[in-house]
Length: 360
Image 1 (cartoon, rainbow, N blue to C red):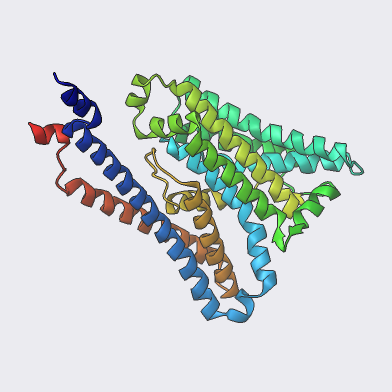
Image 2 (image 1 turned 90 degrees about the vertical axis):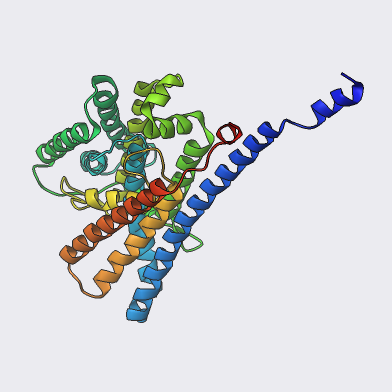
C-alpha cells in the first residue's frame, strides 16, 4: 500500500461508518423534534387556558392577588406530580404520595402542638422529623416493590391505605392546628413578588431534571422503564433503581407535605383527597409515558401550571369541584387517546432500513 493510500484510508472514514453516523444524528434530531413538539403542545395549552379565563373574567383572573394565590397553591401539587412521574418512568406508579405528604404534615403539626413555643433550631428539628417520616414511607414502598416484588400499583395502594389509617388513628379524625411561626412566615414570604413556595418548587424541579438527564441514575431509571430486560443485560440492577426511585418519590412527597403546612397551618388525614387523580393527570398531560421510559420534568411543571389555571378559572366561574373533577377525567382520557393514536400512526409507518440492511 502506498503512503498516499494509507493517508487516504485514515483521512476518510468508510462510507458505511459515515452513513451510520448520519443515521444516528438524524434519529437524535428527530427525538429532539418530538420532545420539542410535546413541550410546544404543553406551552400552547398553558397559554390557551390563561387566555380563555382572562377573556371570561379579566378583572378577577388578572388580579395580582389571584396570580399570587395560584403560584402559592401549585407547588404542593407539582411536587406530588413529579413524584408520580418518577414512578411512571420505571413503568410503575405511586398512589401513596398524598398519604405520605399528609403524614409529613401531620407529624409537623403534631410535634408543634406538643412544643408550641419552639423556635430556631427546634423548628428545624420538627421539620426534619416530618421529612424523615415521609422518607420512611418511600423506603417502605421501595422495599415492597424492589425486594419483595409486589406490583407497584398494589404495593402503593396498600401503603396508601395503611398510611391513611395511621393518620386517622393519630389525629382521631380531627384537623390539627398550628405549626411553627417560622414555617408560616416562610410560606407567606416572597422574593421579587414571587412566592418562596413557588421558588422551592422550581428549584426542586430543576434538581430532579438534572438527576434524570445528567446522571447515571437517570439513565438507568429511564432504561428500566423502557426495557427492563435490556436493562438487566446492561448490568443494571433493577432492585437498586426501583429502591432509589421510590425513595426519591417519598422525599418529594415529604417536601410537598412541608409546603402544605407552610401554606396553611393545619393538617388532616383527608387533606387533598382528590389529589391522587389530579397528579396522575398532570404527569400524563406533561408527557410522561404511563408504560415507562419517557417523561420530562419541564412538561410536568407546565401541566401543573395549566391545571392550576383551570382550577382557578372554574372557581372564578363558580363551577363546582365535581365539575372540575369531571374536567380532570376528560383531560386524562383525551390525552391518553391522543397519545395512543400517535403511537399507532408511528407503528404503521414503513420502517426506514438501516445502512447495513440497505448495503445488503
